[in-house]
Image (cartoon, rainbow, N blue to C red):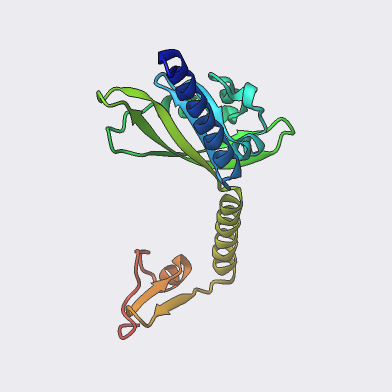
Length: 193
């Protein structure tokens, strides 16, 4: 007696098992994962994303996640995240989470559209990578470059670099000024120097 009711129950059990497996897999990933419906309302976040952003699964649902986006980034992200990208496109954007403890975490998101067999958008799936360390290193590098430029200007010294593989010579802005020239992207060749 394997009637339609038993078949439907088996299908429902299999789907429930598949969903449980999917959620377990997502929770084991070292990157944030989210799902949203066709209107962009969040329907799932994994543990990594919840920890990164500082929200619970329930708080992220619908548009609840938006309250955890840094206020200076929120409007841009809420608009940008729904930008059409076509059937094979990937939308990428960066923003900051402002966590409940007031700490800031930088995130890089990649989102794709999920289409059904009829070609209609049924939702979105995406990843969220914590790029906080990268952004802090980049900011430190910018500060150091500014400090070096200021020190060279004050001391009236310049610097240059030679890439022996390409023959490219790079001059600091101060070196250009010392020679009375307008700074440009590349310096003279090594031979000209």
